[in-house]
Length: 160
Image (cartoon, one colour):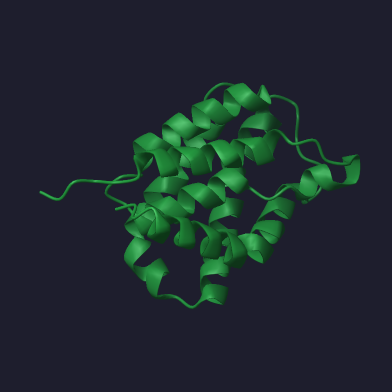
């Protein structure tokens, strides 16, 4: 059995993602904030699916809920679904060209926000219009660069 390397690298990328999540933005840009944690989770699920999966999605979601002071378990559920789908499709997503990968990421991010919209709507806090899709659009735009950065980090630190 081959020894696994770079677990700390995976953790640090999520920590950096959490910093981007809580970083203050102007009021107009808040709804356009990319789903940093979702994109990082997707990347690690397709790069090393044997190490990052549903349990990682749940843990990251719980931390996300605590950091953003949202209903506990809201993002945990969404990220579990995201990790499951990304892990199941990792072989297909890997061979797509970057623009198709970005499209899949946008769809997955939109799917992740649907349970949030549903639950928040039941709690009397529905989103305004289609604003819940804004993170999908910015995630599509930024996916290529995030993918390149995380791939280079994974190769440099030999994460397997």
